[in-house]
Image 1: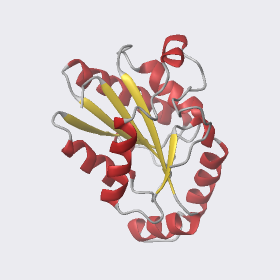
Image 2: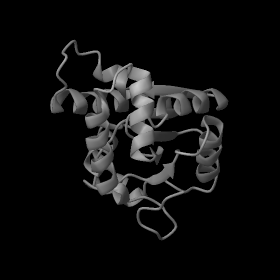
Image 3: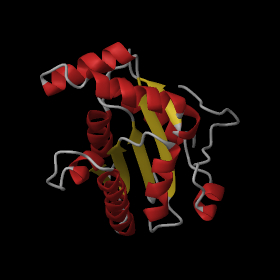
Image 4: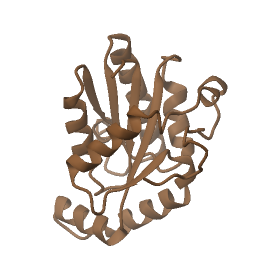
Length: 196
């Protein structure tokens, strides 16, 4: 895999993006995994604000830029609910020649809610997961290639992403990067909102 790539693993809570990103980054010779949630939680405030979220995107882009300059392939694991959120990350990325790929993991809502409840130890996150899932479904055409993980294991999901990446599917177009558009344009081989 050539370097100078940023691979964004996007999706709502409970979809498996952190585990997928961790394993995927370890399979790449010079891979690094940046978890946007960790950056968000650096601010010691319980109520999440819009400013904190966008600061985390900018911080993730700054870290990604530093790792790209050192010759690493960067896997960014985060929740980018809207196309404008991906655009904020890309505008903050300081490496104009880096290729950016976007894969949004998804799944059936009841499965995601159950996974999140098991992870968090309570059912209090069901409403939050539902709202996020609904937003991301509405933005599907702007969030890269969607991969339904409902019936996929972690290694199958990693393999699917690697296969798409090898074919150049999911890459943000150079036009988007050059023009700093608010809505990413993504190589889907002619289909909008492609689902894998």
